[in-house]
Image (cartoon, rainbow, N blue to C red; front, side, top):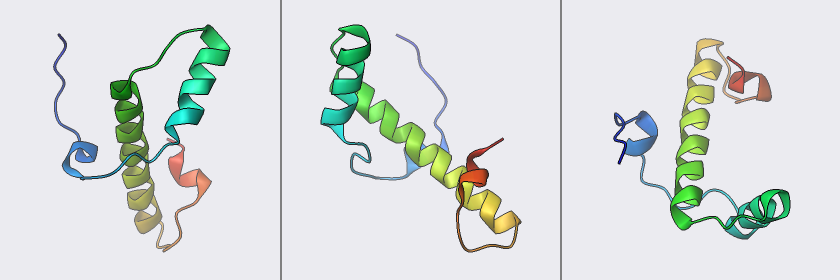
Length: 73
């Protein structure tokens, strides 16, 4: 088992932010593989992590609107 350090996304309590059925369909259509709920949960954590980074970038730019460019590194 691989352990990872907690990220800010781990500190945020959240519900699933992706459409589980759409994610599972994408995985199945592209690979024929099944996907577990823990995959969907990990994907949600990634979404939260990127959203939090985007918020910080928008703040640093003096904006109150998070934009697509705030997701770019």
